[in-house]
Length: 399
Image 1 (cartoon, rainbow, N blue to C red):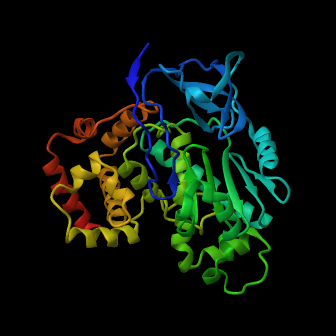
Image 2: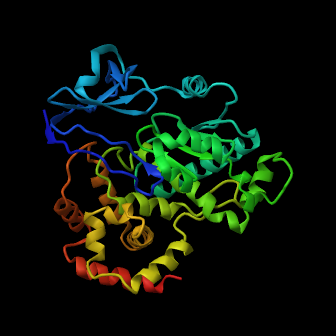
């Protein structure tokens, strides 16, 4: 039995879009992930905020006081405190994730009348906007999916197919989106157009064709091609990039590239999402813009260089605070993209090894700043000052 010290896990918002929920298992725990595919299901009846819940899922972590981290059949992560548990038993049947049909039924039960389902090969989209917009989203996500898996295959990184169908919620307008999302985002919902929730494993957004500066009094949306025409405008590039950014997070956490509720440095998670986010709305098959120069972040990074402290690289590796502070987040995202861009272009094999090391971490493991730094150096070299110099020299040549 492997034992680990669990920390108070409250990562906050890693872009204000990439949302997690507070986790409060803080005692020594044992690792409950089993290598076998035939994992027994755990059934827990609990009461939270006065409401009863019954959850069946895979046990990931159990604390000595009886608190658990459970992965439910729909992919949601449940952090359950011991005083919430009313009944618990192991099911004789193996744990089975929901398939697309069961996922669709559950979503319709949850959201009720007015919502419909659009299914693609890998996604279940629950929406109450036009079917044309849902179809456009499905096509966009599937092209990103193919591009994502093709890219990492070419890098020598072996990914796994998602265990669950990937869920996207699409609301008809900003008002209905905000009403639903306020419970997850709080007041930040007013400045966020879409997000991926690590806990629920869902991407949530609203119909972007209703944005005034994009629609420009066009007639009613009649087809996915019409949607594409609106969102291919230069003014929509950053808007669509946000949706791609969040969908990239979802892919990373469902393909084995990253582990939910593990210590994933923000510079990796966010830098990777920015690396993939540039929209490609001209191709109907691939995603040609993966790894292209992100002009917005390149400009921001060049501005940051004028005031960049000498320890900026080390500070970003060991601490995520710059991403959480609105005053420094813009610079942090730009530097994260730049570092990912540099490493993927110059040291792709080492970068793949580094991702594998991070992905091997389990949820809720404690990782100290020094451990983060040591892990980075073990892959990319001990001389951080030299790497920083080479990194800056490389980025000065990027146009």
